[in-house]
Length: 322
Ligand code: HSE
Picture 1 (cartoon, rainbow, N blue to C red):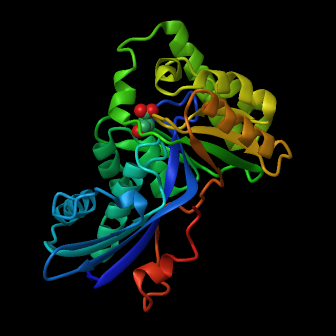
Picture 2: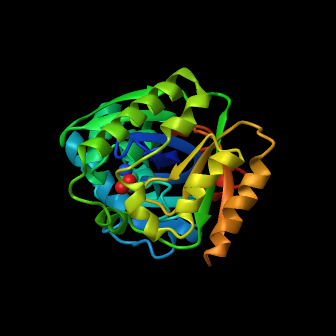
């Protein structure tokens, strides 16, 4: 096994569920975090960007902990690490920030020790940490992921996103933890609601795989999580009903929220008025929000081999989206 002195990775954000595919469907998005990991004599952290505020700078740090899981799994000892991270992915907003940190740490640590673990193993480890495969699968493989997790192993298919589709996300200025958003869900659902979601999730997957964007409006609908989470996101119910009339192919809560994600036809002339509608509807409810036009990311996590000689922040500068 060949150990590198230093690795750098870039990992995308993600949206989970895509409406009906609760804990199953995910898509990577063009918003990123970067991690540099080096072998060191003493562990230290260099965390950059507003989203990193409050993140622990000791061995309880998630990146450090996940890296150690990789080393244990591979039977290698690298106890001391120098870790740098910059993220433009907002925390606890439904854009997969924790999944991207987990996937980034797994990929960086694996690359540092010569990549002994295959991607499928990294996916299983990431899903075991997140407990659902949708966000981590998207961040790892890029594109759209349909995945099933049995508690030990995740099976998945990666779908290339339709080339003429992009997304508009509206990100409320408040945090909503996944734990809280999952506590709002019922323990049991009716057979008719299960059928409602299974049929639409299947239709959504097939529509995305075949590029039939006109089916997204009928498919991107849900009865098993969004109705219960609506009370946590002011304006959400109205937006889910109305946005398809204003240029969204379909719209859903992004993961556990509070971000909402509209799938749109690339270059649709109604995009700016849709953006105004989304922001204004939240404002009416007393919620300030920002919006971003994001592309599906097709690369997933990438090990960066270029620009090794310049500093970590110099490498990132100029690449950031927000
Ligand atoms: N599928 C998950 C949920 C994604 O909706 O709770 C959030 O982590």
